[in-house]
Each structure stands twice: as C-alpha cells, then as structure tokens.
Image 1 (cartoon, helix red, strand yellow):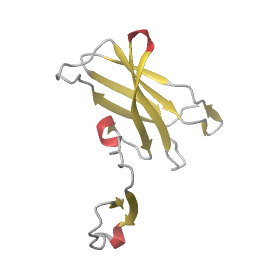
Image 2 (spheres, one colour):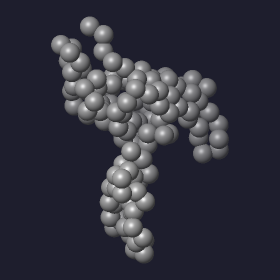
Image 3 (tube, rainbow, N blue to C red):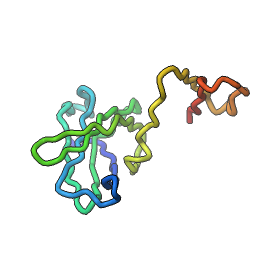
Image 4 (cartoon, rainbow, N blue to C red):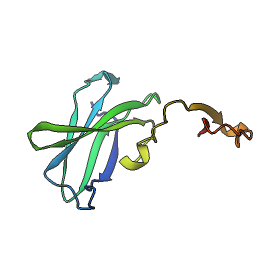
Length: 134
C-alpha cells in the first residue's frame, strides 16, 4: 500500500559558512501513525547530507492531522546535535528552515490570533507576543 509522503529539503553550513558533508539529518516522528491499513513506526529516518544539501522523503498524515518530527544533525561516530522540532501538515515540498520555529524566550506569553482578528490589539507589554494562525 502506498503512503502519502512529503519532501523536506535543506542546506547545512558550519559557523564559518562551509557546507557540511559526511553527516546525516535525522527525522524522528513522535510516536506511531497509520495510513490506511499500513502502520507507520516511530523509527527515525536518516538522510545523508552531501555538499551541504539534503532532501528527505517523509511520511505525511493523509487525514489532515499533521506529523511532528524531532530533527537532529548527526556527525560521524553518532555525535548528535538537536536542531529542533517541526510540524508537517500540508503537501509541501518544504524547506527545513521554514518549518523550524523561533524559540520563545522564558517569561514571554504567546497568544494565538486567527486571520479574522488579525492584526492583534496594540499591547505595550514586550513580554506578550502574538502569533498569527494561518
């Protein structure tokens, strides 16, 4: 049975700007899922980074519920650096950088605002952020 998939691409560079190679990007879904009669395991998907670039084919929930993946950078000898978590809820393709969220600093309150109420009201509190739901 065929499952629905989505493509996630990206580019990896070190802090000096050099493309990364001989490494992996690891996408680990949170828990299991299903596509028709097929059970999708929570096993990680490792994708090789070549010349700083990668392209991953990942499971996409076809019931519109979305899939959360934890993403990590894996160097030789299994040295792992966590990149972050992503949520895939559409057909894509996606760039990994576009899926990664900006971390919210400690002490900041985030209020979700739908399209009908955007823009949010003026709020002078710098520790109150508004996020638009699209």
